[in-house]
Length: 310
Image (cartoon, rainbow, N blue to C red):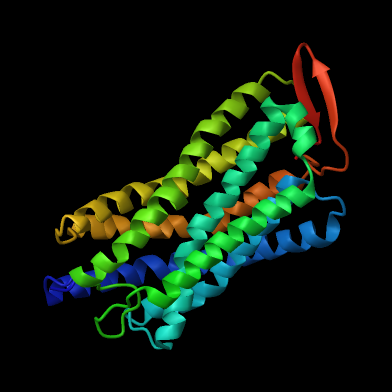
């Protein structure tokens, strides 16, 4: 029996739900996200001469978001066309893989920013030794190499729906069993572990810098709270619902309607990540002047701080 195909009525209900949910959200994300991310790429690449590690991670994050945004028009057309894919199997694999991979790439680079801020705040002397763009470029290259290899393997081997003209939907139980290893690995290594790093490290950093009374510390807290908010709003709901869905499928239960609707709503929330990421760019470049032109250590009442450290 096909997933989500208990009746013709159910199919129509699901298609209408997707048609009225995804296109408005995706169009909003596409328009505003392109403005924010392309503007950020221009500023960080051409306007900032001396780039900090966090600047480099932000450039990579903006690149990942831009790739995702270029895939959105295909998804918008797909849902407006009642979930009928007309662009061929190859484009389904390419755009579908980019669509879902963006979540894991984005949260990985957010984790890199998190670790960078954690070391800079709690271990400033270590940060001074490690801080160089060569190491940051190596880490970024490793993220893209691993992500690109996983994306290529997924594009070449993942099953496509046998349901007529659908793209990454309507899988049979057999197709779901083939997808299970990808789902488990992406959930653990691409979602849950990076989320734990952000949710553990960032509150520690926020607590430490709350002891530092200057404008740099206040700005750092803002970006910490922004990343925490994006993680909690955009990523965690999807991870939780996806875990419930995966456990249900592995136990060979048919997906309940409420899980279906929650998965679609949380997928829409995930797409907002590319819309909200420019908030991070603003905090990194706006009137807070977080441009790393020099790095200084100041000791105030036993607490070390890094001036202009973002």
